Length: 354
Image (tube, rainbow, N blue to C red; front, side, top):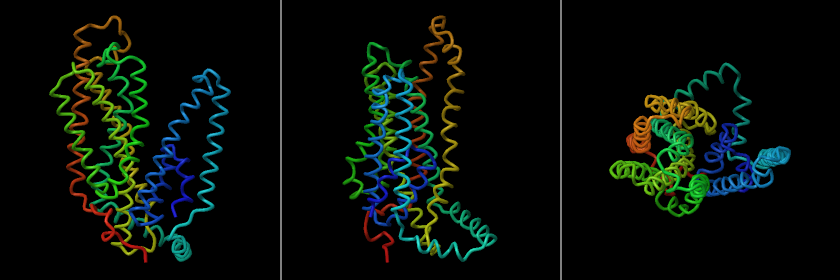
């Protein structure tokens, strides 16, 4: 049942236009946990293949020196993506397709608008949805934090003799590849324990690592490298599982309000509306803090920078590296721990197909 949807996974570079149908797949392809776990597995394999395409692009274009080859490669990728999307659109079907056609034929514009307002209000007042959105906002914030500043923190806090260029490349490569491998290796754990406990454990691990790194201090360079790498991996890996709780929220909404079809796109779109600003908020906040310690001035005049000013900046960076994951993880535990849909990996708790 999952197979017709696999090509769509290769179309998903992370854009809203790609992630909306993916979210709908989690909810509408089946309400069985095992089918959704298969979809998670296929999406991670597709992400691995997508990550490797960057390597092939670099080889074919000679690290962007041959711009014509780079353009040709991107055109081929665009054609393949379009083909995957079209294939999925023509061959996929949902258990709600017939009901959706009937509903569309029976609603006029005014009734549809009132119904839409009512549905949005029902989604916004859902306690589990509120908890998930707050937790997801923090996760998007952390992703933006590490994606934008890991390179800067590494160059400033870790001496070149401790972390050579090759080791840096491996570290950054691990941040792209290891999350997918981690999710793929945890499939049996997801089946037996469930995503709720695994996601919650990652928050405790992040908070614990932040406390330990803060206690050890900035001079433990090798541990700091490990700390940054592990944080990048588990944050991205946990984020890859967020389609599962969102799909369960959609199932719960479908069951509670006895809808004829799920509000998959509406739930995901509302979630994105509140969480996307975190992508911009993280860089703005961090840069504002760093600029208080002269980051902008020191960046423009590295050779002429005062040693004490540089030490203060490095100290501020170290505290940001430790405290931001620690504080955000504590907030995520506070937000997500009351989440009530915890046993969706068990057969009895799911709303079985009739």
